Image (cartoon, rainbow, N blue to C red; front, side, top):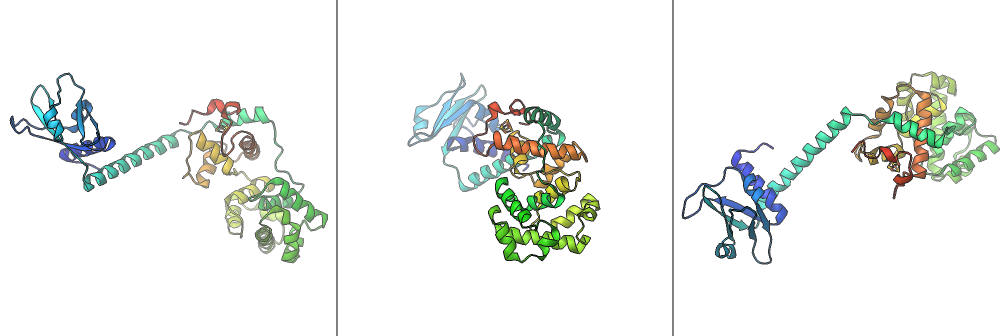
Length: 339
Ligand code: SF4
């Protein structure tokens, strides 16, 4: 918001006084006719306002300034300057002034947010250093656990909102029943599938999701995972995102861990870590976090594989949702870089 000088004065005044609970205006001294100051900031820098019990008081800090008790008792204060004596009226802020203060505060916040985002986009997080610190601390993670491509896909779908132990039980049930294949799941009655994967939680929805993927695979690629993964990454990603129950994180897990495509899985652990280190915030989207990592290691499948697994490890052991253990964490020394 651009303000005329007179508006700027009022605004500065209003903002300054809003913090102290009152508003003052400057005007000519009734007896001397001295001019009001050109700017409110010089006055504000020398005067300090306190809201007393019954009357706002004006307290001066300058050596020349004096407060006249009689005027002060009526809600007035004075300040002597080398040029003139100015008189200030103390009163409660009007509705429009409160609204101006709120609007200025909003503008100020937006400007700060813009400059913060701009400074962030020009500087990238030191992910190579994060990676090295995590790798030297945790070692190789050997992800994704799964004997076949299809098992990895099933795991990626079943692991939504549950622990890996529960997923392992569901996969063991499917394997034990010799039904761990796209064709078997596509043919199987929904109720039977639900019972086999019950341990993974949300089993009714997940059974539908598994069937939706197997139907897609059959319809688009004749049931061949080999053919599916030969599709260019961006195209296949779009196709997967169109399948019921497959969101960005699941699609990227399938692409990376089952298909060896060069995409990064920017899950909640990644966002929490980067947010705590000051590189993203709550509003940053999944795609922004993903591209933030991918542009530093373009197409590096092995790196994406290991990095995601390492971030999950640090997330579980140190970067917990509450009370992160930064003092013991391998990334502790990097904590202040992005702030
Ligand atoms: S625990 Fe602390 S130092 Fe470790 S990744 Fe989280 S925020 Fe960073």
